[in-house]
Structure formats: C-alpha cells, structure tokens
Image (cartoon, rainbow, N blue to C red; front, side):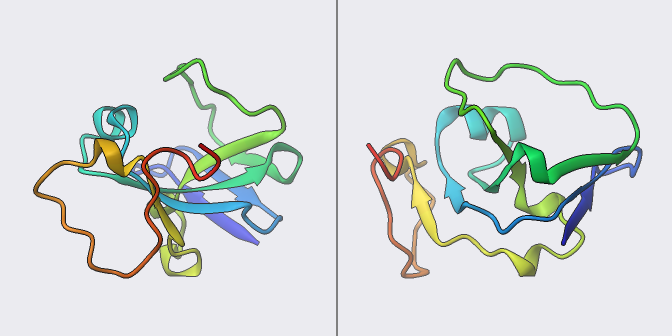
Length: 113
C-alpha cells in the first residue's frame, strides 16, 4: 500500500497497486509546475488510487494523458524511499547544470519515444 499527502496535510491519498513507472522527469512542464530541476514521479492505475481526506483541485498541465492511469509525485509519499526512480526521462530538456551520475538509464524523451 502506498500512502501520501500534500505538504500541508489537507489532502491524503492511498494506492494499492504496484507502480507502473518510476521515473525522474526532466521535461520543462514538470520543472515549471514544481519549481524544481526535475521531478520524481510514479504511475498507478486510477482504480487503485483514492483520496482518503480533503478535496483536491486539478489543472491540465499538458494535452498528453493516459486513460486509466494517474501520476503521483514520489516525494509526496509517506516513504519516498519505497519507490525510487528507475529511469530518467526527457533528458533532452535537462538543465545543463544537472549532472546524472546515478547510473540509471536516461531517455531523450519518454521511454517509448
């Protein structure tokens, strides 16, 4: 079981499925929406994901969506060490001062493209 929350704790969630992806994304959208150099996130099936407290809001960050899946920021988990990234994606957008030295596979765009 994965569980997590927003920074202030008003929104809590759970997911009872194994993540389908565990990545560190370097795309400009992830960087801008998080104000970070890259974002670690994971994907779970929407049917395994539920909010257990609070009422979240949402926004559409891009036109690319995968039906039946939800992406969750890894560091919103209660225990981010549970699900470390396995890959770096969109490294063609990586900031020049970010040096990848962890030995993980790195893809210019998504793993499929």
